[in-house]
Length: 149
Image 1: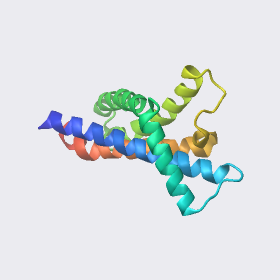
Image 2: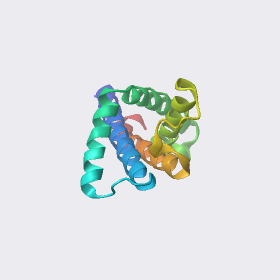
Image 3: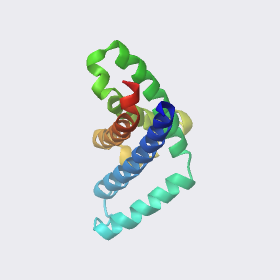
Image 4: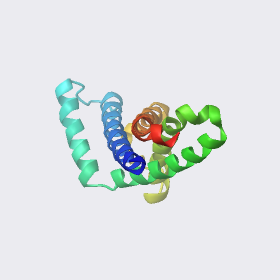
């Protein structure tokens, strides 16, 4: 049962982190780019388009899964060494993984400097992405964490 919880928790973490990331990318883009319609209807339709595009037209979800896998393994090791960190290890790992993923994609995969994820530009955008990662880490901790403590 323990391994099943880890697999289910990981899949849920990736799904939640992905949806939250796209949600925050959409919100931050619409609110900071001049001239975009900021109505709820515009947000809703843009979010659905972004969700579909990033789910089917890019490797973003797959790269997120790899980033979470690396971050959660590191967190599992560190929480055994740093006992006070144990309760927040996975949310912190997720919070570090998503902004790192964004920076790596932009600087390594597409040559840097282009800001492929407009909604992740600047401190606010990266903080929102960290929040998306923390959400994924929290979900992982809630589902898989009790068997991994």
